[in-house]
Length: 113
Length: 113
Image 1 (cartoon, helix red, strand yellow):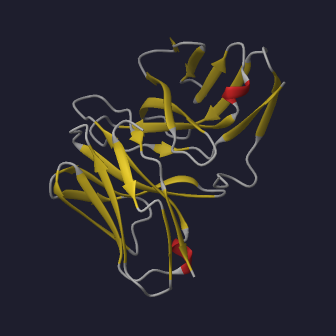
Image 2 (tube, rainbow over the protein chains, first blue to last red; image 1 turned 120 degrees about the vertical axis):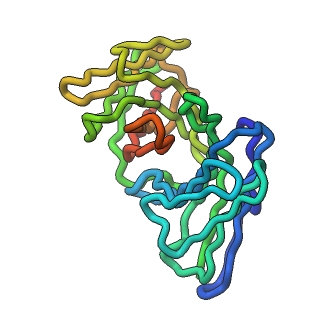
Image 3 (cartoon, each protein chain N blue to C red; image 1 turned 90 degrees about the horizontal axis):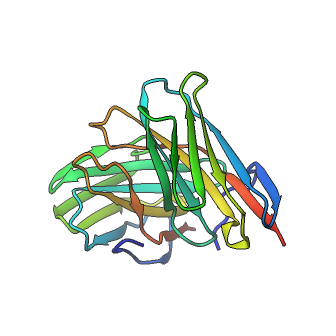
C-alpha cells in the first residue's frame, strides 16, 4: 500500500461521539486525500490537502473536518458521528509535481450505531 | 471483506480470454484518466493511467484506450487470470492543477476457471 497506513482499521462508535481517523505516509508526498466508499456511490472525495496546513473541501465534506500539521499525517475528524457516516474510509496520497496518480491505504471500516 | 457495490455491472470471462472493461466519462475538459483495481477488503490499486494527448497506452498485460470524441475509456486485460477477479474503477481529472480525481462506480470482473 505504497507506505500508507491508516488507523484504526475498524471502529464501532455511537451516534453523537467524536471520531478521528489517522492516515500516515512515509513517501513524503505533497498531496493527501480522504475518501469514503459506499455501495452504489463508488469513491467520493471528502477533503484533501495540498501541503502542511493547506486543505480544501471535496464533494462530501459536510460533517467532516481535517488537519495536517506535518507532511506525513492527515487526520479526518467526525465531530459528532451520525449513522449516515457509516462507511469505509480510504486515505490516498499523490506526489504532485505533475504526477497525478494516487496511491491508497488499506481503509478504515467505521460503523456508527 | 467490504461490499464495494451491491449492484455493480459485472463482466464474466473465461480464464485465458481477454477482458475489456468500459468506462464513459462526462467532462470533455478532463485531461487525465486512470484505472484502479480493488480486491475485496483492500484499497484501490493503481493499474495504468493515460493523458489526453494519447489514445493508447500499454502496460504489462493491460492496455488503456482513450476515445475523446465519444468520451470513452476502456481497459483491456490480456489472458485474464483468476487473480484479476476484482472491481475495476476508472477515474478522471480535469485541469492539471486540481489533483482531484472523480471516480466512476466500478465494474466487477469475474474470472471463470
